[in-house]
Length: 207
Image (cartoon, rainbow, N blue to C red; front, side, top):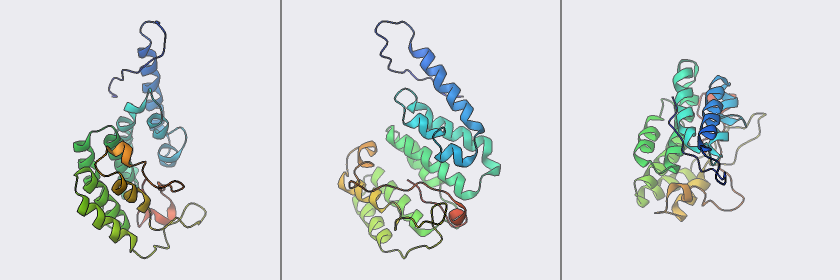
């Protein structure tokens, strides 16, 4: 199911060291397909553990796609969109802009909140090299009135507007790879990636 990873191993002459690493990555990816949505998308044992690993990062987009395939009928439109968005981001970081753009567009769903649409529009504009569109999306996002239904679990309000810092970073580092520009937000800012009951019917904050 998952494509082969040729891991960089610091084995100092031990032959065939990459295969055990790849086997371990695949086993971890398979195991997380049975996690709950919250554990898979936000938990320490979910897809992010692959994305943050030097050896296993190439498995992150595959496991996101596999999870959507297995659990699709039980996922809400907002949660299915969130997984698709994260898969698109992983592909963008890997430099696969064509597949990333395709998924970013497919992530739209009926009833999606406007702030989320603008964040996607800005991200797509960045990948397509359209600064004017990116700036327009950013400016429109900055002027949106707060959505009181968008909260963290427990009711704590999220920073508003969501992911404005990400678009600011994409503007600051326009023309650089997405993997670089995504991290160009100002120090102390953090993009949101949450899905909770309050936001379930109106959208989710996506990192």
